[in-house]
Image (cartoon, rainbow, N blue to C red; front, side, top):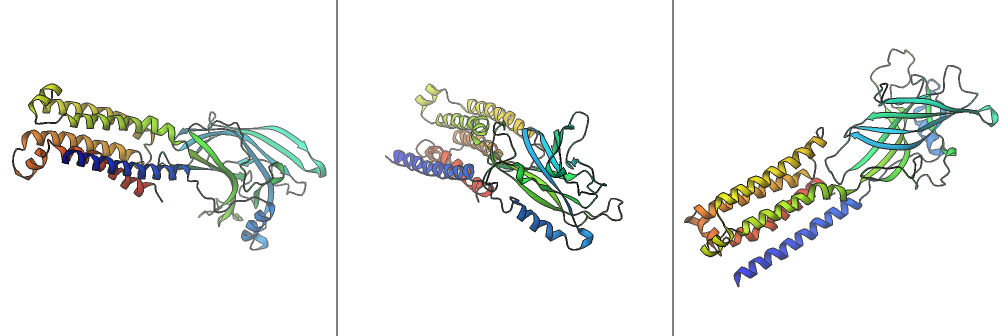
Length: 375
């Protein structure tokens, strides 16, 4: 009777902890990063630029610029490949010292990793000229993977005028986007774009207030103190289902096998013979499962070699602890015949250790989930 009550308590406690863990996962999977500020109309842009134009010396020359992204994928955790079209509208009133063009300051520029080809040039009404470039670039950018697979990615594509050392500044060409509400809708990206393992949540323009501690040799350089650099932002949210199937599902199988191995621990002679229980078999099974987990863990660590420990790695650490727990419990059950430990293990044929297996793991999983990703 007491055996049934203890297992029932363990089952109910485990169910509650699974529900709590699922709630935390669901919350994070559906949580979207909040954008505090974005440029969505000409008035907001003018207001931002006035913050910099403190004197006639810092009077800015604006160049309407737009971007359309056609493809995007991660080369590795810190480098992504991006292709698309960038255009500029060139007013006849712009100084002759300026030339059409742009700079991607974070690009990796080699013959194979960067191209920017002028694909159209047209004179618009009023003498304004339109230039368009097709570009392909590899961009290196710091990424945070510590909450993988619940991580969000904010891709920042920084854009500078070709004469970046001048007082020219790029402004979004809102008139060229057909969507009415740029504050609410994603724009500037192909709706059919393939984002492997990610979902697009938002795109928008913003200014990076960049400061430098040098004038790059230009005595009249105006961009050293919070100069506004145009950024096109792409917010991505990872699809957690793929990561769970690839990384978490094998861990669950290993833990189930561990628990099944632990159930074979018994002092009943008939059961021991029927299940072929011996300590060598337990240690061998634990060693094999440990080896399987280590291979999977190494593959995961190679994927995020530049990142600190990521969230899903805690499940590997938890599994290592579970393997040690099963091996140590089996050994002590066979060897500890007296004392407090021996009595606890002998109670109802190792019942307490078996009943504590899942609640202990789930309690630890809830704890590090809350500490790592839940906010």
